[in-house]
Length: 115
View 1 (cartoon, helix red, strand yellow):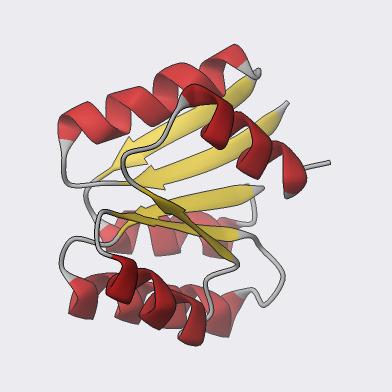
View 2 (spheres, helix red, strand yellow):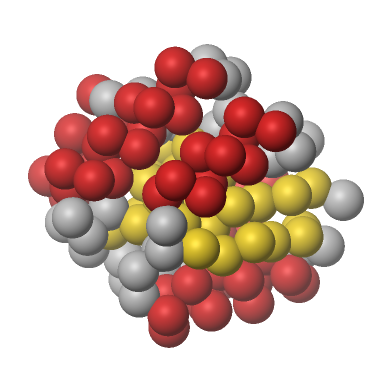
């Protein structure tokens, strides 16, 4: 099984990801605390990370911090704002998932990075 950290401030968005990733046999841990996510990356138990980018400064700093610990872990930035997505890629996100998205979008993207 693959393990995904979902860093998300909006409970309904977190639930949607948890639901679809669960159907793909991912184990998930959801937090709205970027420090908890960084701690889990340091512990080395994470296969992929989803980060909601609603407050760009916090999200981009979190991506930078994770990249300083692990250059290879896939980071998926999630937002409704396309401009935040391009900034996330510049800061080290692997890919972005623009809202609104479907279960199929989630499936295709997460499978791509966790083969």
